[in-house]
Length: 276
Ligand SMILES: Nc1ncnc2c1ncn2[C@@H]1O[C@H](COP(=O)(O)OP(=O)(O)OP(=O)(O)O)[C@@H](O)[C@H]1O
Ligand SMILES: [Mg+2]
Image (tube, rainbow, N blue to C red; front, top):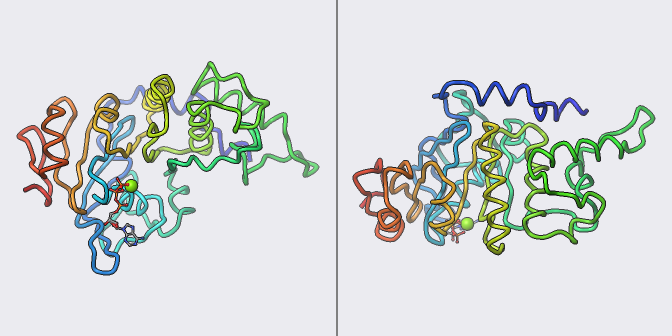
């Protein structure tokens, strides 16, 4: 049981970090479309994500960001298009499949069980048991301390129900739960929307730590400033279509705003089918 989390041991991670730039994407969503009652929520979108990379997914309300990501997390099945994980075609038709491929999603609500502590949340539904079948609380707490030491060394509130924690601390618990069981790809939907400046900084630090470990992150937001500080690349959607993708260093924030609002693709970006 505990081996499931064995990738949190430094060894395998360290190899990933030291490896030369890896060209095979962790995930590639190719030409994905889905319609709801005639409305094309996602229309021919192609995006990818490499190890240790943060890709910001931007666009106005209703652009299709959450729908695209729900396809990756197995909540929806696309009408057409393909998903590749580590270069191999993946069959993701339910959330369990996505987890099997190491794809974990943290929704805005975090979905934590408020009345139990960090360890209880991390191992919820995947509890470690002793050979006698009882809950192995000592192991779960020790493992929780290990994963938190890595993610958020300042975290001390192991014995308290998570409802007593700050927004940033709760976010740490949600991330720990996601990555403990071998996640390679993390989807974060508006992770800082409800947080103040100090807690937003804490989430930013968490994201940087995950990057170091070679985890790829899709960061969904309609706050361009949020994304510009953290992302390596951005992909912009409008009316279900991909306007384009760019390295953050190749475009200005104003140009990306132009992509979001006008669907106009600047010279530094690679245009998609939605570029006007
Ligand atoms: N389950 C559904 N049934 C019908 N229409 C849907 C469904 N989910 C999404 N849509 C529609 O698909 C389009 C894209 O919605 P989506 O939630 O993906 O946008 P978004 O970019 O995440 O927006 P926001 O920034 O508001 O979260 C919208 O027009 C929305 O109304
Ligand atoms: Mg959304």
